[in-house]
Length: 102
Image (cartoon, rainbow, N blue to C red; front, side, top):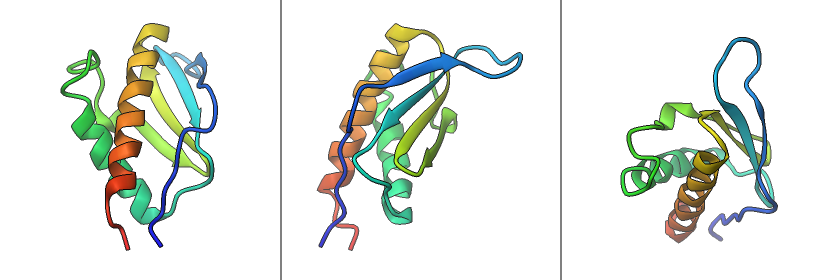
């Protein structure tokens, strides 16, 4: 059976720790994804960025980690930027769910 996930709740934002600029944004998933899913999600997130308002202002390297059941985005500019990245993540999850990772 293929692995599927969805965004479970609204995103939360906080200032980056220390002297780092921007926001740290956490987006909860319905459960913790496996390694293959996490890898594919990162690829699909990278593909979703160029067609979005976030193009050129955010890179997949800033996609922190999938930490258990949360996606962490680092150095997000502001709340509007977080909203755009949230949409990119939703697109990436839909594309990853459509893949046969088995």
